[in-house]
Image 1 (cartoon, rainbow, N blue to C red):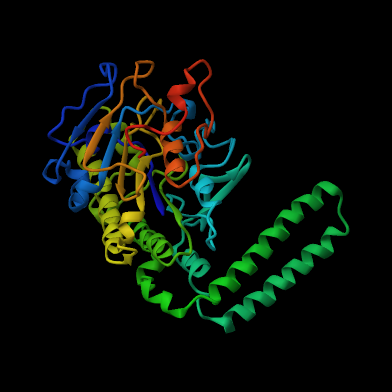
Image 2: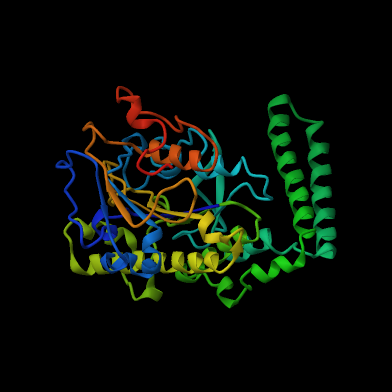
Length: 412
């Protein structure tokens, strides 16, 4: 299992760097360095996951220039391509690529928050292929109804099935009056509705006992506040993973230029994230404090997920030993990013991934030992049993060995 947590507006490397280790500035990293840390060494933003320091890996110095830059790389963060400010989806993203191999009811689940709180769904981070973005569900109530409401409820299923049958027949009727191009489009719609019907039926047949693993819906699911919504989405993603509805989930927290300028007022932060991003360039104390507080909240929610996974037996251990959480930002290291370096925090467990309280700082671009984001994507694919060595797009002229294959420092 794998949970991606993508936070918008950049992640300054120092905010996720252990305090006992020097962070060598970019431009002075002559070789790749591996160092160790303990729970007491974690910076403020990572304090909530201190109990899992021995199950953590921090990556610094990975580059992602192929993804472009600007306020956000959008789908490029998980796709390894340049979206030109979200306008172009050139291929599948890693969450879909991992999920499509699974025989779960949902191949992958995409949830998130946006400054456009009136929208139930936005398209910003996940894709099934070129020109085929996957919607990020922003309304927790919508997400809950889609994923969990049919469990053990055959009566409600009958009503939904009748409605879906009506829609499918309507599509078939319209198809007969259209040309080939329009028919192809409607065929895709028809296929999607049929898939929804099959999925609802399968969910309804699940053992009602599965509901015991699902966090109950509460009043906060009706809230439009981003703090409440983000908390709900973590609960939903965790529930989907532990019930086996999916093995891959993505939480997109303000990903994309149109969606990241969120105010986390419930955390005591009055600034919206766009202003915070600009102020960080001058290291303004108010902005630094606000940024750390917001990031700390994300890791508090990650800690809750890890705790729940650790409480559920699986095999000779727990679900935590077979679930990775990968944290990154859609804007790599800063507000107006060039993707020269891309911090990652990886937690949890996977038998093929070496974590162990380590910090890896990779050599600078074009220095021996440097690696690109493609290599991380390839590593995760390998760890899930899919030996892909060339995921995403490559930088022309750059040694393919830097961009291909799994990372030997991580993949076991």
